[in-house]
Each structure stands twice: as C-alpha cells, then as structure tokens.
Length: 594
Image (cartoon, rainbow, N blue to C red; front, side, top):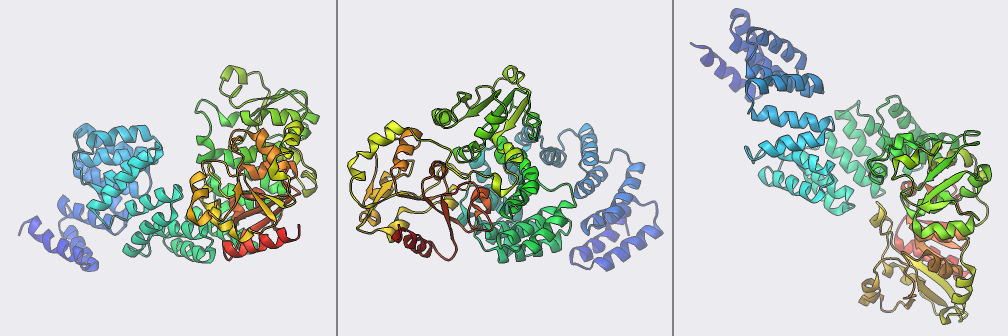
C-alpha cells in the first residue's frame, strides 16, 4: 500500500471529526516511517487545523530543512505565523515564495492582507487590484479589498465589495460584520443591525459580531444588554483590551462608576488601549468633575481618526503642545480651532484668560466667528482657519502651537474655573433694529426652536423631528425657526401644518452668525438639540433648554453627574430617557412657569 492509500482514511476520519483517531494513526505512521515527508506534512496541516500551532511550526521547519524551496511547506508555515500575528515572519516567507513562483495567488493575496494590517493600504490596494480578477469569487480577497477601500474613505465602493462577498457566500461572517460596521459608522443603525443579526445567527460565539452588537446596543442606550454581549465576547477573546474598555464605557453610561472603573483599570494595564477609548475615559472623569485626570486623557482626541481627518496631511499634529502654568510666558503662541463651531465656541470661553496671560497670541477660527470674537474679547488677534497652520514656514514663527481644547489643562481644573457669566456679545445695533420686527411686538412667549444637528458625526442620533415639538404649542407662545439648513420641506409637511413657525428669510442661519445672535438675543427662551446654535445661545447667556439623548457621554460638555453643564450657567438639560414625548412634556412644564 502506497503513502496516499494510507493517508486517505486518516484524512476522512479527521474531516468527520474523529480527530483523536486521526492523530493516533498519523503519529503511528510517522513513528514507523520517520523519513516519509508526506506523513509529517499531513501531521503539520492537521495540527494547524486544530490550532496546535507550535507543533505544526516545528514539523514544517523540519520539512523545509529537507526541501528548502517547497512552496507547499512555505505556504503552510506563513499561514501559522499569520495566525500567531507574527506579520514580519509571514512577510519574509511570502516574499521567498514569490521569488520561487512570482504569480502564486495566495501568497500575493496574503501579502496584501499583511500590508493592510501594517497600515500600508496603498501597497495592499495595488496588489489586490492586480490579482483580484484571477479568482473573482474569492471572499477573503474581496473582503480585504473592501477594508482597504474603507481606509481610503471610498465607502460606497467598499460597501459594494462586502455585498459582493455576501452574494458569493451569504454566510461569510467577516463581510457581514464589515458591512454592518460600515452602515454603523454612517449612522444608519437600523441597516447595520440587519447585518450584525445575520452574522449572529451564523455564529453566536463569534467575538467580532458580539462586539459590534454591543456597540449597537450601547448606542441605543441598551447598556445592560450591551454589557452581556461584550462579556460573552470576552469568553472568546479574554485578552482583548477593547472589550474591557467597551464594558467600562457601558457601565459609565449606566452611571455604575464602581464597575466602570474596575474594567477601565483592567484595560489601562495594557498600553494598547485605543485613543478613542482613552478619550471615553476622559469623558467619564469629566462627568465626575475630576478635571485633573480628564484633561491629560482628553489629549488623545488628537490621535482619533475623526480628529486626524479634519486636518491637512501636511500639518504635524504631534508638534502641538499641552499648556501648563508658566509654559506660555514670553512666548509667541498660535491657537488652532477645534473641529466644529460648537466646540470652538465652547473653548473660546478661555480666550479672555489666555489673552490676559499672554498678549502675543494669534488664534485661528472659523471665519464666521471672527468679528464676534473680536468684539467679545476686545482683540484683533483672530485669523481665518488655516491662515498660519496651512503654511509650514509661517508655523516656524511660533514658539507654541496649541489646540483650543488643550487650554482646558491650564484654565479648567476645578468647577470654580468655569465661566459664571456670558462671554459672547451680539451686535447691539443689529439686535436693537431686529427688536422692532413685528414678530417680537406681541406679548407672547418668544420661543426659538432648533431640532437637528446637521454636520455632527452623531447628528442623526442627536436630532429630533419638528413634529416632536407639537406638545409645546399654546396660544400664548410664538415659535421662531432657528434650524439651519434646508428645512422648508419639513416645515411644509402635512403633519407640521398646524405648527405656526416664523422664519427670518433674510437671515442665513448657517452662515450669518451675527444675524443669528440678534434673533437669539430677542428670545425669551431657546429650545434645542445639541448643535452649534445651542453653544452660541448658551455663550450669550440666552436661557436655553437643551434636549439630548440619555447617552450624552458622547457630548462631554452636556454630561455631568448633576445633570447640568459647568460650561454655561443658563442651560437646562433634559435627557431623553423614556420617550421624546414625555421629555417634551417636561419641557412644557418649564415653559409654563416663564
């Protein structure tokens, strides 16, 4: 009986799940035929299959010592190193295979995978584009290509590749998760859940699916269920630090700080904690008013993908510093704006203190805010965004470059450090002129409303519908539209026709902040979701009722254990807990007292 005849029944037993019998037979054959490389190779492949990786590696290294250029041996060896996450060794062996056989498909494909894992996405993309048509129905290659496209911000193309994989193999769990995660990042949570649920039905123990479901549930404020999903994922990946941090974050959202701190401490023992999760921990400390701990971790925002995408690749964020007492004396300072107008207004509350400390300052800002800041802080140090930061030579003229949010480390270390008075000043002439408008002449309560956050990453999660505000309609109230963006169609919808909402057609609410401030100044109260207008109103001292999701830890400035914000003295926060309708009824109760 030749070797192949002896091997066939062993393979059959192994494939039928009789692994113990199969291993007994193959080890017996090796013992009696120590020079037969076929037997040892089968043993190595079987060990690889059942994740006895060290045994498989040992056998393959011996085989390669006998046949240096065996592509089969080399191929199996690098697959072990990939499983062990030893990408360097894998890449060395793959390159050796490609020297022997330069068109080896799996070696090229897996080299692309390694390049992707090492964040060399351009090289990964180049390799995959050369080979992807050779085996156009290879789910692994198509899935990796989809991930590469995501890294290149080609989201629609990436989705098409994940869908293509699922058409080829409806049970390809990685692509189901990746497609779901893509929709999740686009805030299309319902569609994301469809794919996470499909992945879960295929394998209820797969950690990646459980983590995705946990993230979905946490974002939906179902944190107890999220924690259960994360803890189940830990059974499969007990060393996955991300899971510990996600559990900590979910406990934080449930206001269970004892459990939250316990899991964060486990996560923090490992230095591989991601910037976004360190940032989440800073939000937890901010919630507890532990500012000294919060601000150091808050600096990790500059390492998150959201932050990095906001700045030109030419700008070196690492050159920015964290100001400390005495560090800014006699230095030429450039302050850079944060990502959105809302946070820019928020952090501008520290500009007066900065200018008082050091007059040799320039501050980049959104051009819509320049005249407002000049008037409010009695200074002409404000320049348009990118005025200095987009020019390397200009940057050399500054001793310190600081992001506005980093000023917190210097000026906001206790609750008493936060502003106790309004700090943005409207254009008095414009405001006085607008006060004569007929809409402000009646004795009704003048209520401004805004119900959407258009440009925020979590905009859809923060937004309401105009129809949600119908609970507030009363004869003695006049409502004024302060929602920026094109909302004419929504206002005209049949369900909103009973809502008399006045719009100032001559004021561009998105671009004309001066006009917006004059409207706000003439209101009795402003009812809004979290958006840039909310920050402008709050900074002016306008009585502001803010409606936000219970999961307000995403918006650190509205999240505090006392259910108020230290940033603005005139904001009353209403978290949506049971329903939007009940929340608006509570708001109505406040309006009744005005």
